Length: 109
Image (tube, rainbow, N blue to C red; front, top):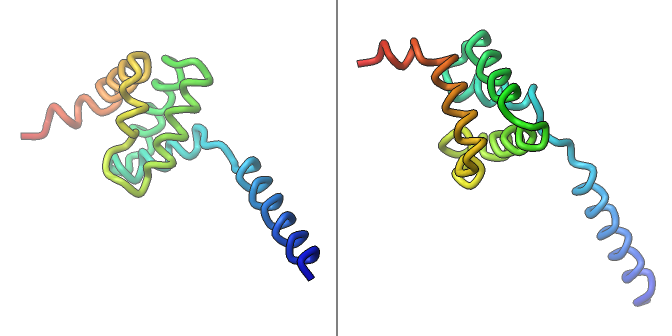
């Protein structure tokens, strides 16, 4: 009796690990979706923002930003603090914000 239960438990664990490893990585599409949700819903501004970030960062750092924003989408802030603290990422985020949302922010009281 113990053997089938053990086999089922092992099989369940193997499926769970395989599912976690097969999880899709966030990228440009997911970062744009988060931007649209968090930063006013302007497709033009969000496309500009995502492209500016992508241009400034290596593919690995861009993926880190996209994944961080996607994972953080239900919480406050766009990108988690531990991600934005990276100097290269922080600089890219600031440049993209200024470039793509600068006129919006400047017009606010």
